[in-house]
Image (cartoon, rainbow, N blue to C red; front, side):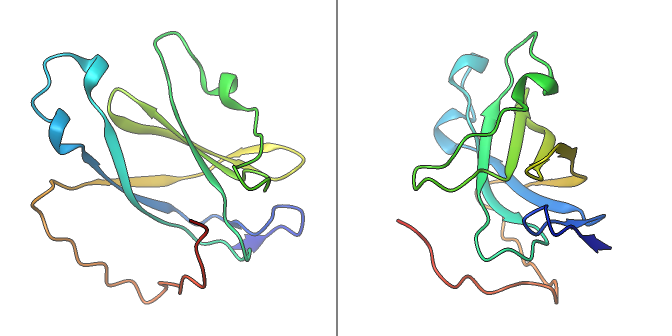
Length: 132
Protein backbone atom coordinates (compact mmCIF):
# COMPACT_ATOMS: atom_id res chain seq x y z
CA UNK A 1 0.00 0.00 0.00
CA UNK A 2 1.19 3.45 -0.80
CA UNK A 3 0.97 6.80 0.96
CA UNK A 4 1.12 9.80 -1.32
CA UNK A 5 2.98 12.80 0.08
CA UNK A 6 0.52 15.09 -1.66
CA UNK A 7 -2.48 13.04 -0.59
CA UNK A 8 -2.66 14.21 2.99
CA UNK A 9 -2.31 10.72 4.30
CA UNK A 10 -4.81 8.26 2.77
CA UNK A 11 -3.22 4.83 2.48
CA UNK A 12 -4.01 4.04 -1.16
CA UNK A 13 -5.33 0.53 -1.67
CA UNK A 14 -6.92 0.32 1.77
CA UNK A 15 -10.67 -0.06 2.18
CA UNK A 16 -12.76 2.23 4.37
CA UNK A 17 -15.32 0.56 6.63
CA UNK A 18 -18.43 2.67 7.21
CA UNK A 19 -20.94 1.64 9.88
CA UNK A 20 -24.47 2.95 9.25
CA UNK A 21 -27.93 2.73 10.74
CA UNK A 22 -31.30 4.19 9.87
CA UNK A 23 -32.23 6.87 12.39
CA UNK A 24 -34.70 5.38 14.87
CA UNK A 25 -37.40 8.02 14.34
CA UNK A 26 -37.31 7.43 10.61
CA UNK A 27 -37.27 3.61 10.43
CA UNK A 28 -41.01 3.45 9.91
CA UNK A 29 -41.37 6.61 7.82
CA UNK A 30 -43.49 6.07 4.74
CA UNK A 31 -41.83 8.79 2.70
CA UNK A 32 -38.16 8.68 1.65
CA UNK A 33 -38.15 12.46 2.13
CA UNK A 34 -38.13 12.02 5.92
CA UNK A 35 -35.77 9.05 6.19
CA UNK A 36 -32.24 9.62 7.48
CA UNK A 37 -29.13 7.45 7.34
CA UNK A 38 -26.75 7.87 10.27
CA UNK A 39 -23.07 7.19 9.86
CA UNK A 40 -22.08 5.99 13.30
CA UNK A 41 -18.43 5.06 12.69
CA UNK A 42 -15.84 5.37 9.93
CA UNK A 43 -12.72 3.23 10.04
CA UNK A 44 -10.04 4.34 7.58
CA UNK A 45 -6.29 4.16 7.14
CA UNK A 46 -4.86 7.67 6.96
CA UNK A 47 -1.51 8.90 8.22
CA UNK A 48 -2.59 12.53 8.69
CA UNK A 49 -2.86 14.19 12.07
CA UNK A 50 -6.27 15.56 11.06
CA UNK A 51 -8.86 13.74 8.98
CA UNK A 52 -11.74 15.77 7.57
CA UNK A 53 -14.88 14.10 6.24
CA UNK A 54 -17.94 15.52 4.52
CA UNK A 55 -21.19 13.71 3.74
CA UNK A 56 -23.52 14.59 0.89
CA UNK A 57 -26.87 13.16 -0.16
CA UNK A 58 -27.25 12.52 -3.89
CA UNK A 59 -30.57 13.57 -5.34
CA UNK A 60 -32.09 11.85 -8.36
CA UNK A 61 -30.26 12.91 -11.49
CA UNK A 62 -27.00 13.85 -9.77
CA UNK A 63 -23.71 12.16 -10.64
CA UNK A 64 -20.56 11.52 -8.64
CA UNK A 65 -18.78 14.17 -10.74
CA UNK A 66 -21.23 16.76 -9.38
CA UNK A 67 -19.62 16.30 -5.94
CA UNK A 68 -15.98 16.77 -6.92
CA UNK A 69 -15.87 20.17 -5.26
CA UNK A 70 -14.28 20.16 -1.83
CA UNK A 71 -14.40 23.18 0.43
CA UNK A 72 -13.31 23.58 4.02
CA UNK A 73 -14.86 22.38 7.24
CA UNK A 74 -16.23 24.66 9.98
CA UNK A 75 -12.72 25.19 11.38
CA UNK A 76 -11.20 26.10 8.02
CA UNK A 77 -9.45 22.78 7.34
CA UNK A 78 -9.51 21.41 3.79
CA UNK A 79 -12.01 18.57 3.40
CA UNK A 80 -10.29 15.35 2.29
CA UNK A 81 -13.04 12.71 2.20
CA UNK A 82 -16.57 12.95 0.86
CA UNK A 83 -19.06 10.15 1.54
CA UNK A 84 -21.95 10.13 -0.92
CA UNK A 85 -25.30 8.70 0.20
CA UNK A 86 -27.94 7.60 -2.29
CA UNK A 87 -31.17 5.67 -1.64
CA UNK A 88 -30.34 5.26 2.08
CA UNK A 89 -27.00 3.54 1.36
CA UNK A 90 -23.41 4.62 0.99
CA UNK A 91 -23.02 5.01 -2.76
CA UNK A 92 -19.48 6.32 -3.26
CA UNK A 93 -16.48 7.71 -1.39
CA UNK A 94 -14.19 10.36 -2.87
CA UNK A 95 -10.77 11.44 -1.66
CA UNK A 96 -9.29 14.88 -2.32
CA UNK A 97 -5.52 14.55 -2.86
CA UNK A 98 -5.13 18.28 -3.30
CA UNK A 99 -4.45 17.77 -7.03
CA UNK A 100 -7.16 15.29 -8.00
CA UNK A 101 -10.19 13.39 -6.74
CA UNK A 102 -9.78 9.67 -6.26
CA UNK A 103 -12.35 6.92 -5.79
CA UNK A 104 -11.90 5.11 -2.49
CA UNK A 105 -12.94 1.50 -1.99
CA UNK A 106 -15.36 1.12 0.91
CA UNK A 107 -17.44 -1.45 2.73
CA UNK A 108 -20.72 -0.45 4.36
CA UNK A 109 -21.78 -2.31 7.47
CA UNK A 110 -25.46 -1.72 8.26
CA UNK A 111 -26.41 -2.23 11.87
CA UNK A 112 -29.75 -2.01 13.60
CA UNK A 113 -30.07 0.34 16.55
CA UNK A 114 -30.38 -2.58 18.98
CA UNK A 115 -27.52 -4.59 17.51
CA UNK A 116 -24.19 -4.75 19.30
CA UNK A 117 -21.10 -4.58 17.13
CA UNK A 118 -17.62 -5.60 18.20
CA UNK A 119 -14.73 -4.21 16.15
CA UNK A 120 -11.71 -6.45 16.63
CA UNK A 121 -9.30 -4.91 14.15
CA UNK A 122 -5.71 -4.78 15.42
CA UNK A 123 -5.28 -1.63 13.33
CA UNK A 124 -7.59 0.56 15.40
CA UNK A 125 -6.03 3.92 16.12
CA UNK A 126 -6.32 6.26 19.03
CA UNK A 127 -8.29 9.49 18.82
CA UNK A 128 -5.97 12.15 20.20
CA UNK A 129 -8.54 14.94 20.23
CA UNK A 130 -11.82 16.05 18.85
CA UNK A 131 -13.06 19.50 17.98
CA UNK A 132 -16.44 20.13 19.56
